[in-house]
Each structure stands twice: as C-alpha cells, then as structure tokens.
Amino acid sequence: MYCTDFEYDNKKLSDYDMMIGALNGSGGSEIVSSGADIVFNQIRPSGSGFFNLYSSTYQEPFTATFQVMKNPCKCRGKYYLSPMEVSHIQRWLCQKNYNRFKIFQEGYEDIHWNAVFSSRQVMLNGHIAGLELTLYTDAPYAYLDQMKYAFHCTKNVPGTLYDTSDELGSIYPDVLIIINEPGIFKLENSMDNKVTEIRNVISGEAITIHGRNQTISSSNPDHKIFSDFNWFFPRIINTYQNNRNAFTASLECDVTFTYSPIRKVGL
Image (cartoon, rainbow, N blue to C red; front, side):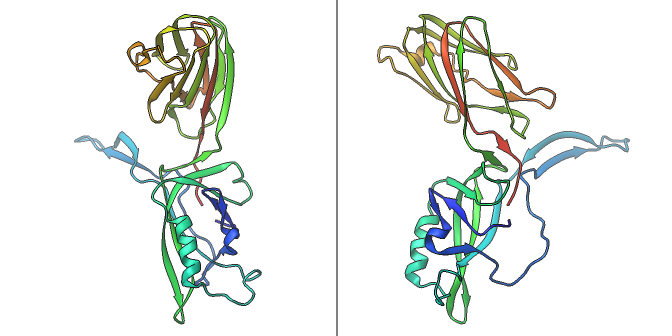
C-alpha cells in the first residue's frame, strides 16, 4: 500500500490529522495478498505420477495490517497521541459491523472493501506514537463501486449486461422490477438454466429483490408474493469464455440490476 489516507464509514483518516506511515522505520519490497489466495486440493491416484485437481476454495477473507500516526505537517510539534485522541479514533474504526473502506491511491479510485478493524497502540518512550491497525474484510477480494444497469424489457426482447468481475462464477444482484402488464412474470438469463417466476403480478407493481440477503418484497400489499415466487433469485454469471448476460422477461417491464463486481487486488 502506497498511500497516506483512507476513508472508512464516510470519514477520512486525515479528518483526525492522521496519516498512514511506518513507525518502525522499515522499508523496501513486501509480499501482500492480491485477492487470489486459492487453496487447491490435489490427489495422486495410486500408481500414477500425476496429481488430479479435485477442488479449489478460498479459505480465508482478505486481511491487512498497517500503522497510522499523526501527520507531522498538521500536529504542530505534538507527535504523540493522547488517550482522548486514541479513544476518538478507535470509536470510529473499531466498530462491530462491516463498513466501506477505500484507500486514496492511484488506480484504486473505484475499488473498496467491506471491513472491520482491530487496533493496538504503538508505544515509544512511554508515549503513544501511533496505532497498528488490522483490517478484516468479508471476502477474499475487493469490489468495484456499485454499478447499476437499467433495461426496458418488452416480451422476449432481452436486456444485456456484461459482468466485469475478476472472479468466475455467479453473483446475486439487487433487482428492482417495475411491472407494466399483469400476468405471470418470468425472468430468464441466457447464461443460466433456471428461471425466476412470480405469479399474479399487476401493472404498476414494484418488486424489490435483495440478492445477497435472499429477500423479496412487493409494493402491492395485497400480493402474497411469498406464495407466488418460485424462490429462484436472478444471478449474474461469468465464465472464462463468456460474461454476456442477456435477460429476457415474459411481460413488459423495467428492470434495474445493482451490484458490485469483484476485483482481485490487495493493499
């Protein structure tokens, strides 16, 4: 990581007259995770000299450790942190829920992590010289900032979305569907072999799907959507050969997909 400032939960480290720095004076090159630490399970069949690849998985989320200290250009000679200053900073950083974390570094402008922090004091001559922060994220990789794709779908005329994620596989996006005609609504992705189906929709009804939380709701209070939904949530799919997702609806509607593509980068 080559930057001096970051943003967490809509506040900046520089708001506290602090900066990222190395308090131990070390420098030079270092090896860090780039969001692609995959564990491969290989087994050699009896009598064979070759190893078969049986599975691969991420075993740990992304973590990173770095130090912060007072910005010497702003501290007016008061280089050490007071207990009160430490209290304010840790109240901001050491929360128990994931918050958005971004660094201010060239090339990272549209990249973020969902993160929590732990903190330890760095002591020098009996004073608090800074804090050592350990970042814990919710995934092995980072995310691009949230993207929205909106389509007006007429019967059997698809809306197309190209997934730019680095990770191959599927993502469950948030989806807002505005129904323009009544009937049985079906949403099909050309990359998938399953169909999202919601029966008894009416014109003007707004259906909201939260993909990550696997929830669905309707603006029509009379619609018993839990009974009329087939409980297959729309997916955005990405293979090495193909990232084109063409969504076709059975009824005229307006559909908006919202999601954060995956980026395999580290700090």
